Length: 330
Ligand code: AMP
Ligand code: MG
Image (cartoon, rainbow, N blue to C red):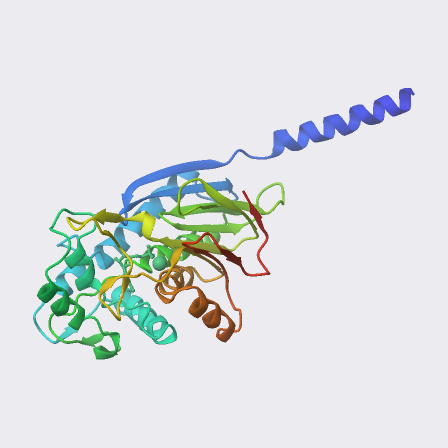
């Protein structure tokens, strides 16, 4: 009996020791970056730099990216390129790389994701207060500028029709999540979670060796369920519910546009979540598949060789989850 008791005591002390040795996660919120709040959790810091230094370096990377990629900050390079009336402009490496990656995803999605959709973001002004519905002539003029096939990018030299408005709102946050993950891993951080408005990244390992658990929001509010993920994985969700405004015609206008119509996508989907090892691809695909709709999204996934995972939620409540995901419905 005494032997059993001492065994129990040893096991108890061992568990206590494990708990005491598991480093507490370090979390920080960087407000107002890339039009959202960025949450950074470092589960264990095996790096030479302190957690505060790592977070400060992440903030610098985000600020640098914003100075290149923001459409709405007049001082940013992208805003200056959009305002430039020359047909040919020279881009920084950051902007040229972002555009090159975007164009390849536009080709892959047959233009459902199109970085020239910026004129539609300006026209509908979902986060502002211009009159909705838009004037039909203004809609036709804006739609006429949406065409990724009209761009030519050679090295850092971009030629485009004057009036093209580039917008990386559908890809930049996923791309930046990957930039931060690469940085943190290179610094020796052993694991963590990042969240950039609709884009979550899990990387490395948790100290307890268990999978990362990421909640997926339900379009109508609350949670659809929970994903169990290993690092390094990116989860990106797109949905009309994220940003919308009601016009004087009583119609709800949202922020994901169908380049084929120039109007907010009306594909019958309420939300799309993409899970991928590639952050930029997860982000661009969640937007593109939302535009495509349920059947086309499933065909796209098959044609892509099932090389990503996804959760589709239809407006009628039907949910499709790709079989390789570990997903626990709420
Ligand atoms: P996301 O939340 O990742 O789906 O991205 C939506 C944002 O991407 C919008 O706020 C616009 O700035 C931009 N956008 C909207 N529609 C498209 C589209 N079809 N292709 C590329 N970017 C788009
Ligand atoms: Mg996206």
